Structure formats: structure tokens, C-alpha cells
Length: 45
Image (cartoon, rainbow, N blue to C red):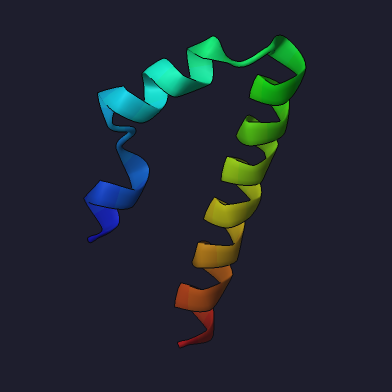
């Protein structure tokens, strides 16, 4: 489960590259936020 979260499937990587730089940055920030959220959830358990 954890490995699936950290690895980016090729399809979504292709989708990201089609986005504008601004949107790519937003997606990256959201990914980082989600990762931090998951870390906190794991730490809370």
C-alpha cells in the first residue's frame, strides 16, 4: 500500500507533463501536503 502511494504511475506522469508549469507546481504542492498528512495520520496511530 505504501509503495503504491509513493510511486507515480506513468499515466499520471504523462498527465502532469501536459499541464502548464503553474498547474504542475500546484499539483506538486498538493502531493507534498498529502504526503505530510499521511505521515501525521501514521504518527497519530
